[in-house]
Length: 172
Length: 433
Image (cartoon, rainbow over all chains, first blue to last red; front, side):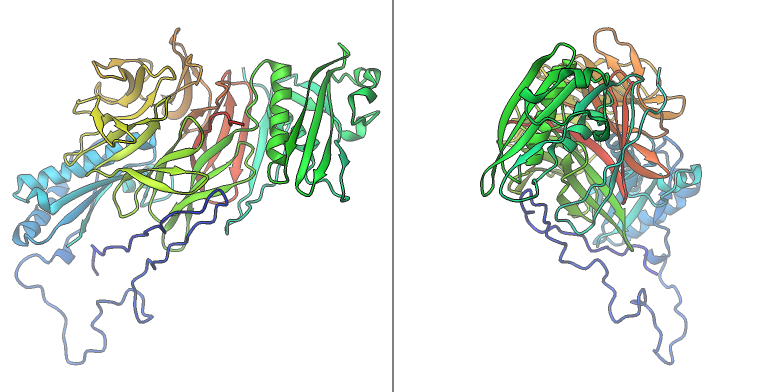
C-alpha cells in the first residue's frame, strides 16, 4: 500500500456566477482508481509465477509510517518518533529528486487561525529535524491545515490526539 | 442573569438555486418582558389575487426574533386596518399593545410595487414613522426588512440589522471527502447563496466595508492563498499566495488594505498589511511567536491581533503604521481572535473559561470581561454593524451551528443548519441603498 498517494486536487472552475449562486462544479474526478477494482492499483494479482516481494537495498519509502503525532499544545517530536523522522531523512538524502510536503494539523480546540499557526509549528519541527539530518530545504514544503482536516471527527481526547499530527506526503 | 427560554419559533428556509437544500431553524431565547406590538396583515392592491410577499409576516418575524418584542396573533386583533386613518387606538390599547404597524402593497406595473407602512404609538395616539418604498418582486423582501429596521430603531433607539447579511463556511462530509462552501445569506438565514465551493478547506471570510466583496482563505492546490471576490459578479482575484501560511484577512476601514498573516518558508506567522491594488506588503510584527488574526480598530489607528509570545495566546495591539505591540488582555490563559465592535467600544474574543472556549466581550475603556456564551467550543465572534449583537459558531451534538447573542448577554438565538458543519460566521456591514 502506498502511503504517499497524491490526491487529485479540486481545482475550482474559474469564476462563480453572480449572486445567483450557481457554482461551477469541480470538473475533475478525485478518485484516480481505474478499472473498477478500487485500491488495487499496485496489486500483483494475476501475474502467474511471481512470488512475494522481498525488500532490497535498504528502506523502501512505502514501509515508512507517514504520520507523526504530537502532545497537546506541543510541537516537540516524541522520542518514539525520532527513528521514523530519521528514516525519512535517509530516504530524502538518498533520493535527492524526492521531495515531501509536510502537512501540519491541530485539534479543534480554540481559534481556527491560531490553530493554523500551531499546525505550521509542528510541520516546521519536522522540517527542521529533516534539515539537521542533511535534507535540503528545496526538498521540503510545508502547509498547515490547522483544525480544518481532522483525521478523527469526534471531540474526545483520543480524537484530539489523532488530529494533532504531521502527515508526510511525497510529492515526487 | 440569563432568563429562561421565552419562546421558540421555527422558520423553514430554502435555498434558491443550489443543489443541496439546507434547513435553517431559528430558536430564540429572549428577555422576560418583550414589548407587545401588533403587525396588522398588509393590504394588497394589485392585478393578481396573490400578493408577492407577506410583508407583515416578515416584519413580524424580524421583531419577534430580536427578542425585544412580542407581536400579538392575528386572531387576537379587534380590527385590521391597512391605512393609518382607520386605526382605532382604543382597540389596541385595550389589548395592551404598545405599538401598531399598518401598511399595504400597491402594484404600479408588471414588476413594480410600492410598499407603504406606518408605525403608531397606541398610548400616545400618534404616528412615529411612516414611509413608502418602491420595490420589485426581487427586492420586496429587502424592502420589508428595511421597514422592520426603521420600526425597530424608532421603538428601541438602536439601529436595526434585519436588512444585513451573514457570510459563513459549511463543511459537508461526502463519501470520500469533505465539501467546503462559502455561503452568504440574509441575517435571518433566508436567501442563501453559495459564493464558492471546494474540496479543499475554505476559511476566514471577511467583508469589505462597502459590503460588496469578501476576502477569504482557500486551500485549493493544497496550499493556502487569499482571494478577494466581488459578490455581484462572482469575479475573484488572488491577492496573496506566498510560501507557507497566507491567512486571516481583514479589511481596513477604507477598504483599500487587508491585514493578513504570512508565515513564510520558515513558518513564523507574522502580521502584515497588504495594499490590495499594489500588492505591496508591510510587515508589522517580527516576533518568533505565532502572530495572527489581525483586525483593524474602526478608527484605523490600531491593529489588534493574537500572539502567543507570552506563552499562551493573548490579544495585543500595534499601531497600524508600525511600532511596538502592547499586550491588551491579561485575564485567563487563552484569549484569541479579537474583533472590535463597529462603534469601537468593545472587543470580542475567544476566551478559555475553565477549559471551555467561550465568546467574551471586553469593554475597551474599563477592560472588564463579560462571558457571553456557554458552549465548550465556541469560536469566531463577529459583531453586527449596530454593535449591539454578535454572531459566533458553537457546537450542537457535534455539529457546528451559529448563534447570536446581544452584547449584554440577554437575548440569544440559534441558527441550526440541517446539513454539515457550519462555522466562521461574519456579519455584513449595513446595506447601502
